[in-house]
Structure formats: structure tokens, C-alpha cells
Picture 1: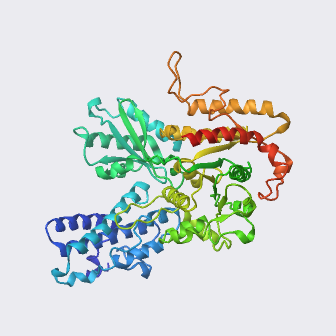
Picture 2 (picture 1 turned 30 degrees about the vertical axis):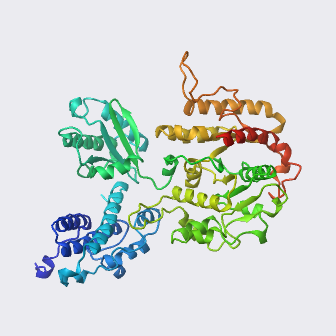
Picture 3 (picture 1 turned 60 degrees about the vertical axis):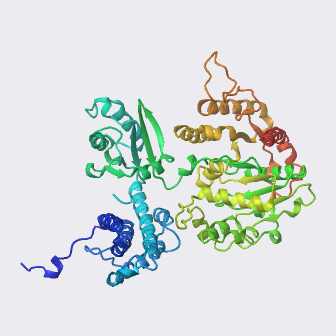
Amino acid sequence: MPQPHPHLTRQLSADFLDAHFRHWEDAELLRDNGRLANADQLYGLSAECGLKAIMQRLGMRTTPEGKPENPDFQVHIDRLWNVFRGFASGKKAVRMASRLSGGNPFQDWLIDHRYANRSHFTPDTIRQHKKGAAQVRSLVMEARLSGILR
Amino acid sequence: MTSLITFDHIVPRITSILEDSTALSLRPSEYPSEVWVIRDFTGRCRVLAPSEPQVPQEGVFLQKFAEALHGHLGAHAYKPDESLLPMEMSELAKLKSEARTIRVGRIALNLVDRLLTASDWTVFPTVQRSGKPVRFTLFSLKGGMGRSTTAAVLAQHLARRGYNVLLVDLDLESPGLSSALLEENERPDFGIVDWFVEDLVDQGDRVLSRMTARARWSQDLRGSIVVVPAHGRLPGEYLPKLGRVFLDRPPNDDEAPETWPSRLSRLLTALEEQEVPDVVIVDSRSGLHDIAAAVVAHIQAHVLLFCTDSGANWTGYRLLFDYWQAYQAIQYIRHRLSVVAALVPPDRSTEYLAGFRERAWDLFRDTMYDDIPPGEPEADAFSFDLADEQAPHAPLPIYWNPGLASLASLRDLEHSAVLPAYQQFLMGFEVLWSLLREE
């Protein structure tokens, strides 16, 4: 029997909803302890996972590892925020999307900031990104109440 | 084969689980005083688990209650491992205003419904608006009852007496009031749908001054009639705009999203500030639609309910009134209602109106009026006799006639058919108008 490639065995299947929660919880822990740089990354990842959890339930197709099949959706939160607003069509989805603010709070957030020096992360930028992540959090709660997410 | 459990079994079955003291094998002290159930888009139910317990071991109650729901609601329940949804107290507090509370003994069952439409029928503003300008909403369950004609007749009647009238066409899915009231070349650039779409990108105020027009046919009257049409001179891409009207407005920063009824209220207030009318007449869409919900429930207008004496009509209104009753919303609406008897047959009007009045009274007595036990003082009670002419159920009659039915244009109100049809209605309206102005 052929063995799976060692690289693939390290790949875990995606659970966007759980990832959304754990990134938020850890971001809060880090922020409360003054670890702003990594808290900032995790707020962004939490928001991305929350939106992708909803998009998946609204019809976004993904590989088992969670990579969206549509390349437009293979983006992080700095671009996903506006992609989500464009993706939403139909009553359920549009009701969801209209709960996100028009301005993208993550426009200055980048996944590559994980390589940056900690001095770049100020309380102001963190506050902004936390607000964005909190909006997605309440969107996820609404999606659960509505039956879109379990 | 197991029996079919449908949507309408949900509430009675949840209630009976809580009523039956043996259902969960718990002592009364182990029940919390407040229980939350959410019924989602698909009509499936689960239990909300508050983050702060009201009784020790509340988790045990919640687990058993959730399991019981699964056992009793069939396809309308979630699987047991998904049937409890943890909720922060702050989130729960936000849901409070949407919940319908059902008393089951000493337990308050809060049922939260998630609907795509219809949720706005129970959205009543918490702040009372000042009575000025007086607002009227014209509503009917079915079309073809003469709502738009009545809007025009009322506007003319009030303008003739020196009042400035703002006439708002909110029959957006069947727009036409503006073309009936304004000639082609006097229509404004924009209409209601344009405001709603531009407001989503923060420029509603820039179309506001270009969405009203003074009706030329009314220029000899003492007061003015200003019309706000559904669409402007060029309707443009009407359907893609209409499809965006009922959206909540996305929040800016820390705000909550603004609901569509609140947006409509904001639009009306802005129009009132701009035009300074004495009275606003809103032509609603017919039927149990979200537009009607907002203009009946939310904008605090006096509502003229157009009815005919038919079984379908009374059944329809009873559905709505029962729904308000279930949400304990009667108190917000009952003092703002007047019944209009539309399409009254002139050849047998006396017996028709007598029968109409009785059916209307039955409906209001069952749903809107207070019960007054014999011997109790009735000074503050909201209750009216069958014959009371100032009661909400007392019909304001509009007579059917062939001339009115074939009226080509609402600009032609001097037509001989109009006066006999509306004479009695306008007399009744005068009484209502003077009462509302005193308020």
C-alpha cells in the first residue's frame, strides 16, 4: 500500500470555526499580557477564519485542507474583508455581510508582519484590528443563531 | 411510522416540557426562572446556555432540557451534541428585545426567532416621537382597495384647508403614485429607492433635495402637496436598486448596523426637516410585507387599515393582531389604528356597514381591547362599544362607484365620482384629524 507523502501527513483538515475561536482567545491572552505583536497577528487570523467558516457554509468550495478552490478567496484578512462583501449575494448572505463595516479595519494588516520587529505594533493599530475581529465574532454568533453555522 | 412533527408543534411542545414537572426529573428549585430557545432560519431549535447561571447546577437543567427538545421536536431540533449554544450575558441582553416571552408557570420562556422577513412587524421604537407633523400610513392586505386614490383625496382635502402635505410613495414594488400625481415633466430626478441605495454609500443627503416635487395641479390650493415618488423621472436600474432597499446599513466603526425600519424613519425625518409639512401621508405596500411592517409598526404613524367585509380580510388581520398579541405588542399599536371600509356597495350600504362594523368589533374585542370584568371601573381601559363612532373599529366608509373605478388620473379629483364616494369618509376623517392635532 502506498504511503502518503510525509509532507501531506503533517497537513490537518481545516476547522475554520474552531480556528476562529482559538485565535481570538489567544489574541486576547496575548494582548492582556502586553504581547501586542503576536496578538495583532492572531486578531487578523481569527477574523479570516470566521469569515471563511461562514463562506464555506454559504457555498465556498474548499480542498479538505481548507484551501478555497477559487483563487480569489485564497487571501488573508487584509483582502478577504472586501472579498466577503463582494461574495455575499442572496438574502441570508447579504444580511450577514451588511453587519460588517464598510471601511476595512484590516487594510494595514499583513500576514508578512509576522517577520516584523515588535516595535512596529502600537496600541492604536491593535485596537483597530481587535475591533474588526470583534465584528467578525459577532457575525459568527449571528450565523450560529441563524443556523448558518452550527 | 412516527407522527409528523411540524413547525406549529414547536411552541406547544416546548411549553409542555416545561409545564410537566416530571419531564426532566428535576426538583422545582433546579429550574431557572428564565429559559432561552432560539429557532433558526430553518425552523430548528436549540437552547441558549447563559454564561452566568441563575441556579446552582444550571448546566444539568440545560443539558436535560436540550435533550428533551431533541426528543420532542423531531426534525425541528438540533442533534443532542449541537443543541446547546453557549452565550455571553452581553449577547443575551441584546437578544432580549427580539425575544417573545411566553409565561410557563413561574418560568419565562424567551423564544428568539431568526427570520429573513417579517421580523419587523414587532419592531416598535422605544422613543415616542413628537406628534408633529402628523403621519398617516395607508395600509391594506390586498391591492385594489383604493389606497392610492385615498392618499390623493386626503392630500387634496388637507391642502385645500391650508395644510402642507407630504405624500410618500412607499409602494416600491408596484410604484405608480408619482406618475398618477405628477406630470412627466414635473417629476423629480430621484425617488425613494435612490435614497436608500445612495445612503449605503453615505450620500443619501445629496439626493434628498432632488427627490421631491410640488404637484402642479395642486397649485391653486391654500396648502401645498409635495410628492416623494418611488423613482425619479428616469427610473434607471430600478430592480437592482430595489433589491438593495431593505438592507441594514453597514456600521461605521463602533456603531451597530442600522436596521431598515430605522433607516426609513431617518429618511422621513430628513424629508420632514426639508419640506416642513403639517402632515405626511405614506402609501404603503399591501400585504404582510416588510415595507408595510415598517410603516405600520415603526414610524409611529396613525394607520388607516383598508378592509372589505370578507372572510379573507378578517382572517388576514387576525393573523397580524394575534402575532402582535403573542409579542405583547398590542399596547404600542392599538391607539394608532382606524378602520376604513373600502369599496362599500352603495345600493346596500346600510346593512353592509352594519355587518362590517360587527366583524371589525369582534376582531378588535378579541385582540386589541381590554377585558373589563363586570363592576370594574372602565375609566382608563382601552375598550369601546360596538356603536362608538370614535372607536378604532368604527368604519370610515369609502363607497364604490364605476366612475371612481375608472378614474384615469389622480390629478382629476374634481371628477364628479369622487365627492359622493368620499363625503362620509372625509367627515369621519375630520374628527380623527382634530383629535390627532390636539394630541
